[in-house]
Image 1 (cartoon, rainbow, N blue to C red):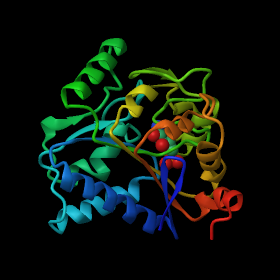
Image 2: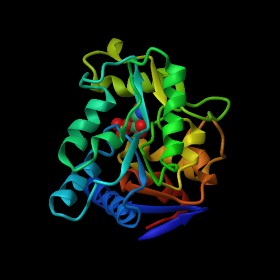
Image 3: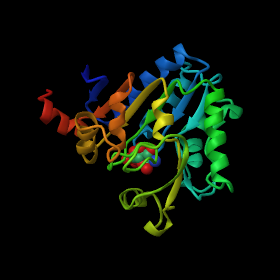
Image 4: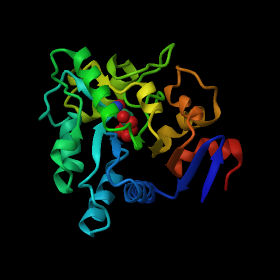
Length: 255
Ligand code: GLP
């Protein structure tokens, strides 16, 4: 069921639903072992099914969120918290409003912060106070970004303000009324912050992720493919649906 490429555990599931259930199981097992840990959440279309499965687990009495602390990876900038494309709104709709999280333990970057440097520094400080991230959930952009850490000629360190690439603005325009409404910047945990997580769970679904998944797992580690840095982390699991695994199947001869 699990295969390994270097340090990274790979799990290929037959479809999106199976990928989502597998990810929810990994998350729930981690919470069972670290009930007061800090959990890093991601947004985007990919983890929606996993969040749905987590809500189900909570409703069935199989998952307790009451002691955990949460940190979201990123947020558009500028954006109002109640904008239907803000990541705050996404998390409220998909998870926070449906489970027994302690509201005082939910942390999100403020897409309206006046002083973004202070906002990002304070965020890293809060992650430190929480003892670091126990498990970080990630999606991946078609250009290899994780969080909003775009391809660059260096790996970013801590949380900061970033410019979005044309590729990401185009990819994410489908969620907005028009492309012009997609914010051009974001606040994002840095690659360094992500790499400090004790465990990482990356999800990818769909044929449009297949090439970048192969680049991430089998290509050179380089900042032009930000997710490739995960090859250097000791505890990463990648859960894929079959279409997202197509390129690695062809390259490695997986069945
Ligand atoms: C956004 C988010 C990422 C996410 C990526 C992929 O830009 N900042 O955290 O992983 O998009 O999104 P999707 O899952 O919709 O493909």
